Length: 480
Ligand SMILES: [Zn+2]
Image (cartoon, rainbow, N blue to C red):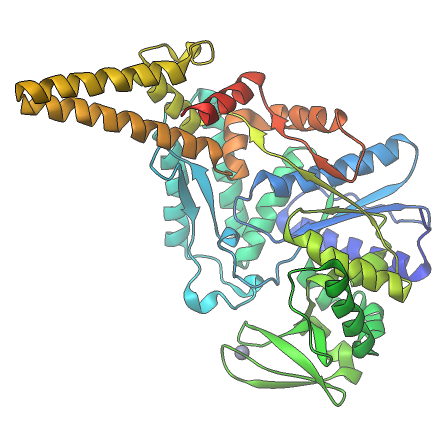
């Protein structure tokens, strides 16, 4: 692994200062130790989603695990997780997420809606909800769970989560901070030793400005490598213009403005307030706090800027962009990290899953405990056949009420199976796993999952919280 150079060491020192600020704001533990040139730098990041999927927490868990494994081998390591709080609000996940629910969709969306007007704004520019809106949303989370027969342990965990959320709301000054604080506090509860920071603070403090200058000094070269990478890898990403710039300008109205190079200036028009902007690129320092890199430039700038050795990435779209950024980094002679990602489902049963299983057992006329040993597909088939025969018999005898009853029961079986399948296939908020499994079991299951598979850069491994849950998922999927 390459040693850190002076510029990277000084950038990491600056980042540690902003992680200290963040930890103070979020009121989480902060341990500071200055890096030296042999320190292993492990980095990851994500947008601060509202009550996010487990995937986000798994990234933080992997950061912690990589750091711990390095420490266990006697190597100093630093694990940094950045919140891309200046991202556009184009994804619903920033403010709401799915919770498994016993209804036709198999889930209920909990959280807040972003108005049409705010979609093109930066997330850290969005005000936090009013106290009334907030209380209503939190109340909805509580009442969601109170619809199911939950254990006292589940209730205690739910209370703890609600209290943590309330605390984050009080401490945060904008919406993105509520979520970032919450994610970092949950990570603290999972005993993950990771340092958190906001991407907006990177800009505010002028960190990585030299790397920006490297790119801006010759955008033509950058764009040409960008486009040839897309062609070389056959990526489904639009080519860029020769005079485009790989960053956004933050309009005071809250929007992000796409800018183009025009005789030493970055120019662009705001799509919300229609204001025309002209930024003198020779005075980058003055406007740096109002800029943010796009996805590809972020990878190039951050990896070289902090000398990242290991990058914990997401799967999906990110992998496409990383093919472009890797090419650019190589051509610029920049540092290129080893990338690791963890992809997999979570097999567990929460309150809504249990409600679906109780209903299935009732339909089949069996005990919930016997779902795995009984041939429920066969039982359901027999039940349906029996109801069809009874309805046919009632039809022959002209018994209208009985026809209605048997047809209704037949339909109810299909509805219950559809609901069960929907519940068992949706990707839930991590909160549903947390509420039903608890911190200790989650930590143990994740460690066990990764211990079984710690080679290869893309780890495809599901988390099975208990073997019964895994078999139940397979059984529900198998119902025809
Ligand atoms: Zn504007």
